[in-house]
Length: 406
Image (tube, rainbow, N blue to C red; front, side, top):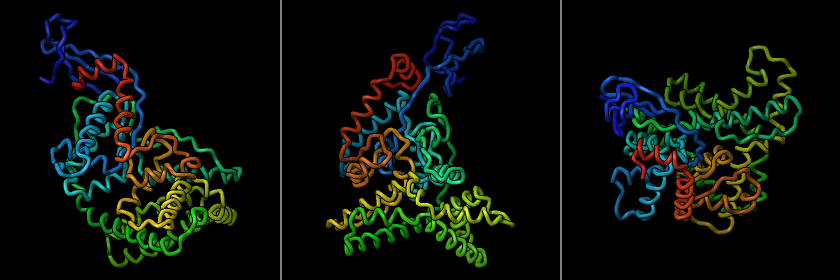
């Protein structure tokens, strides 16, 4: 009943054309006989997939292509058709995985066809996802806290991509995909308000840059310094608002403040320095305060990359750019700052991709993967096709047999 083509002769009962594909998953392919029910699991070749970050625009455009809902008059139609084909081929040939993150989840929730887009992202990306940005950033902060407590030296961060992934990137994709129809639309209004608030703040900042015309070095210095103390002040403000929200019975505000990334980071940090207890030792409190003032925090990868991005954007406005930031800029910066050092390639908004190719970002930041955007769409297709071409004959034959990849 569940056996599917291609069929072989059964090795046990010798029935002709009865031994069919039953399931694929992890690192094994299982076949079963439709007559005698004998089954066997065959090991599948080992894989080493590249990790490619696709921004929300890319996921949305590929979804529209696959669902036939893309406006024919929208720009770059042919390019997205070809990107869709190249991504699909590289995924099914097990040369890449395109994980989604909590940033994608938030953007998907406010999309007008959020459920369909979320399921499409799962299909496009493969069976791996990024760990939440707060987890990755907390992991880096914990490494710095440990180094400060032991030697007060700046730690070396190993940007191992598997450390920031949920699930194994190197498993074979199942031939059947099971998903759930969970509806997150109840959170959409809150996400929209948060996004609009952040966008308004960035717009105000851009207007200030236009007026004050800071140099790259000036803005970078402003962004890098005092991060620990700023973090602690935001934490205090958040918890004052949290107390007021609890007293007012505002469930949405209570939830959003309690789960705010800064709240999560600070609670992890307080636990690491043992200052989250009822009775706190004076030495622990002093060490915690000194850590928040430590200039070594300027080298936390997430913080440093973000600081460079803001400084580069400020330089644009100081040099005469008039077009204000888009609503997605903050999310783009967060994604680059968090996942950029770990992945093999990123497909980003044009402006973000351009910023990363400017000096000193290009030379100073620990981002070694390829950077693409719609401006370099042909290069992106060529990159994906080169990865697909590198698939072994065995993997290619199995992918054709299981998934119908040509």
